[in-house]
Amino acid sequence: MITTSRHAAELDELGYTLLPSWVPADLLAELRATVARLYEIEGEKAGSEFRLEPGCLRLANLVDKAPVFQRVIAAPELLALVEHVIGPDYKLSSLNCRTALPGCAPQPLHADMGGIADERGYWVCNIIWMLDAYTPDNGPLRVVPGSHRWRRLPASDLPDLRASHPAEKLVTAPAGSVVVTNAHVWHGGVANRTNSNRTALHAFYCRRDKPQQQYQKKLLRPEVQATLPPDVRHLLALDDPLNDELANSNIARSGFLPAPERPRAY
Image (tube, rainbow, N blue to C red; front, side):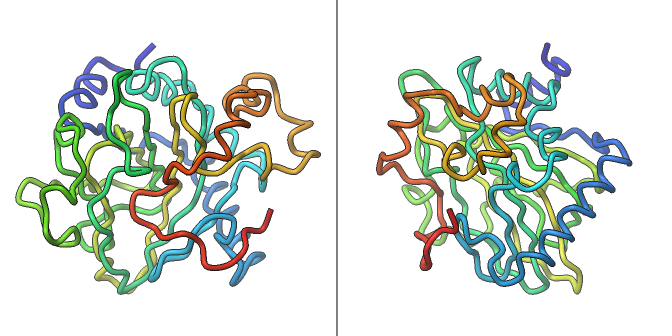
């Protein structure tokens, strides 16, 4: 079941919905500690499985790195909202962490994977888990409400994708909040004008006829795959021949990040 009719209606109309203080305190503490440990372990290699972003720290391939992340990708109440956006035929595309450092520049407005709804409808959904509070000054999410319904990308309308949009809204909330987005909506992080880091997890889902942003079957170690229950294996598309075929496609994997400049750590 969908969490509430209001959340579903907001996803339909606005392209996003906010669940304030949704993450239990013990889970939030565990996620923060795990992310801090991974940043320390990976050092300069953090995020190298995918793509790096100037002014930010990133972690990628998180399902491989700690069991707690299964709770992030498979939360039933949130998957109900993913299904509301995409339909029942969905899979995890990636689970990453992004930390906006002090002075981090704004992201360009974009749609995830450069995606436009097709004849089957919407095919990307992104869930942001706020490990830190999102404030107006520390690099929160900006969204242009309703833009997911326009079926075009920001570059078709805007000469400067990093400039403020007259209709944009900032999404601010306490740590432990979750925002679910129809990832076709025009969005991006704004500049971090504080002296503190701002960290969030990004659980990104796509329709099963599209390639994963990060090919989970190749990234997850065999010993990790062997421990996963059937429902998580299905969510990761580990036993899906179509997903294996799609992994070799040339569909864009990001709405704005360039291709990696160094080899991926497979």
